[in-house]
Length: 88
Image (cartoon, rainbow, N blue to C red; front, side, top):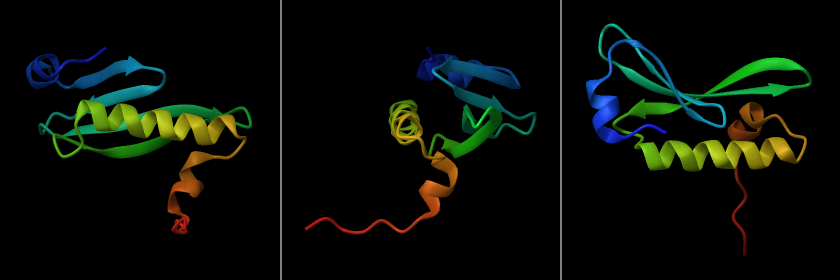
């Protein structure tokens, strides 16, 4: 699992955190959270935001939310784009 210190010191590459969560570090210094998953036997990727705007804990929460949607048989990428109805 990644740590704040490890992320800040990492060189450009892709760092796995676990359960499909990865941090892509570009040569220009940008750090992007990605969730890799399979849906209907196809490899897919969901962008979760940029570090440090999205912290490690937030990225893990977003990954867990996407995994919950995926467990229900729904692709989390288009599901994320649907407007959320407020619960009463």
